[in-house]
Image 1 (spheres, helix red, strand yellow):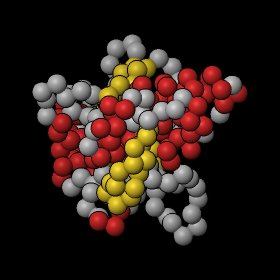
Image 2: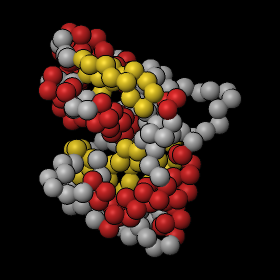
Image 3: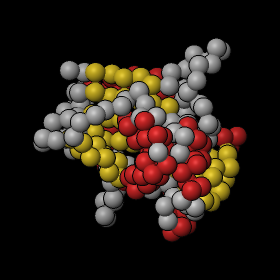
Image 4: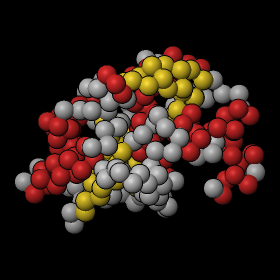
Length: 224
């Protein structure tokens, strides 16, 4: 990546990532070739046992998290995993298949007394205006009914794009189909595009081609 040409640029890129997303796993850093920068900066780390797919006991992994501040790592393991999962959507948007240039602002959504059921985990605000704003959601295994309700809530708030990250690879296709059905029924007003991605935060190279695996890692639906 172009920021690797100089250590100062590499450290600045890591600071940008962690300022935006607050916490990531070492696996995500290795994939972005930023782990060395974390060592240079002597950033705090903490390891917790996390169930990466909420309904599957066998999905438990020991995840090492990295943050700019020690205080962030005192959050509950479930919350840290949620931050890292949301960060995977940011990584897809900034560095990966969904890479986008131009004026936009990515930010985590603070609850401020509101229910998380009606608010996304993060949003991408584009300029000028709100014509192409995105709601970003991390899903570690929601019940399908809950996912549909959340998508409808985001659509009702005026977002035009859903960027949905799930740790359950087999659900990438089913979620994309569910959102398409909701759109056809008129239940996703304003939504013009949906991207569903597999968010793997526990492996160094999860998205490489696997000959016997035919599950999607990303599905996009454009409605207009």
